[in-house]
Length: 275
Image (cartoon, rainbow, N blue to C red; front, side):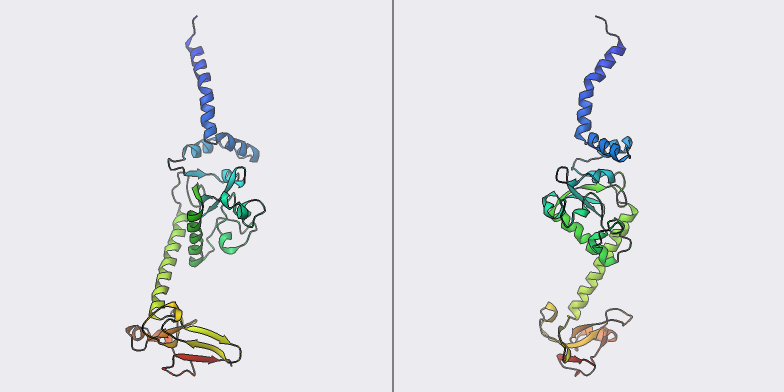
């Protein structure tokens, strides 16, 4: 029986079809196509690109629409923070339907981790309004999820591009994190030089400041005297610091220190009276 080349090619493709379908199904192509058909955003090119972009470490580049699927126990509970996707299904008590943090699932709502606002404006990945310290606090949340939940990959969008590389926005966030860490390091250095005083407020007499060898939670072999310490050059706000008057640190930072009015120069305890 003679079979021409056209028929042979046809049978060959038909024999390969089940394998192709299985391959697409294994990469969630079928589910992804159904999702996009339902919301009217079908883009087969993107689906194929992201499906093939899953690397050997099991990390995946998620599309926004794909991440929306993971808001229930059947598919799993996923959330994104600063573009990193985590499986939080084991925390279903908090992240499942009806849980206090269910609004975080299926999206990147990084801003709400800091503001606590769960409306349309709050549930966004735009954190450009946050201060340096707030961005550092948000990055601490990322570390929390890295430690306690399963990292699944990255979200294509504001913080990562199609191949998973950081965007300019991601670099801006990391610059703020580094700046916050430098500020924290400076604060720790200042606290070691001038440990915080013990503080007690009395409604009848006023605020009591006093120093010990362990005030501020920093053990040392000296007590010190209470002084107003202005940590910034504008001299608008201060904290109480225990100062060793015969130290090099005191001599170098005199301009940022002030005595409390009505307090003896060498007293280790000072009462700032209510006026």
